Figure 1 (cartoon, rainbow, N blue to C red):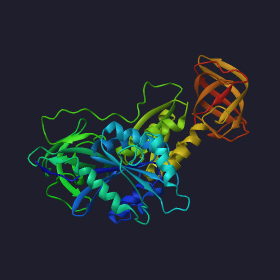
Figure 2: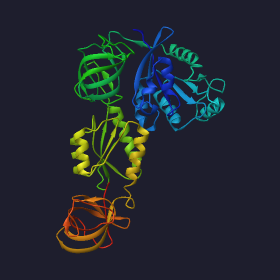
Figure 3: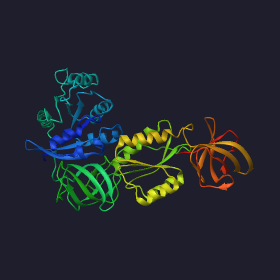
Figure 4: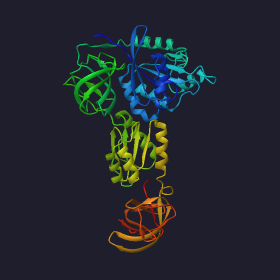
Length: 466
């Protein structure tokens, strides 16, 4: 057994300065490179302080990343709870407190942004006290430091508090043990294959070692440290990128090189549950597994009371097959931090498949919410039925006016009587002025041959999903 470096997780509300703090510690420009100025996937970084190596886990503050933050707390030995002096305790601050307590790890508090004109550290302390964080000098024993991550004021004292707290934990690792640790990131690279970010907690990992989690396995082909350099071995608690998994493991899973190790799979971020026939179908794509988990939660939240059917979810670029899947199921495609292949873009335009993407999660959340909120019958594309003609089996000839368009030939629809859904159907043939057309604009009167499980009557609305 030998002393090992600590793993520190920085937690708190969005824009309270987590990445800026780590920036100052590492003397790098990670925050400037982050899309939208927020960290959108867990990253682990190694730093030196007074001759001691320390690994920091940077966790995104947006609420969509709740599960990712919980994963970060699982691997950490100590947490820094960061609270902005100009903003106080916010929703993700409260969530971070609960996550830290649930993980049963020690923590210190950083009251950040004391350089701002409207900074009020006492307010932040009072709100922390109201939320069960008992600071030193206020009836408790939780150490804290007022800092400015921007100027560096108070940061050295904060790091001293961290090392002091860690000394009490007496962290050890066994160099002779099978390597073990946690999966921090998981993504597929089109050129290099499955890239998995890890933090090792015990033992030593080497190229050639068999490695597995509860859901994936493989053999380590290469180890890359944070600097990008290849390594012949990996010791606690250095973060690294490894290549060699046959499939992508889940973020948050424990990995081990021990063939006898028993695992419990990491909990899924969002369960789709049984398929609701009235649910809005969506296809999800993201750059890596962690982002995909966040995307699932984002879409469910953005939908509100509207049920969601996740038709397919995967890691990588949005491809032609994704668009085909969406077209076949009437789904929209939502992509986070991923690109749309040219062929997929062309097909989406030709098939009128909605594709919503963004590099910034809160912008994506807004865009998805706007589109899904448009799924309310009063805001969705629709045709008002003015007349009905012949009917044979489930096929009917009907006429109507496009109230909100455009609508397209071969599109599926929902038959609505006021606010009541009667059933579903599909346009088999679309005409205007007795000529076949592919699309009808708003205000156009149309004749249709439709197939419907329920009779379509005058006054009904044909409502389209997107």
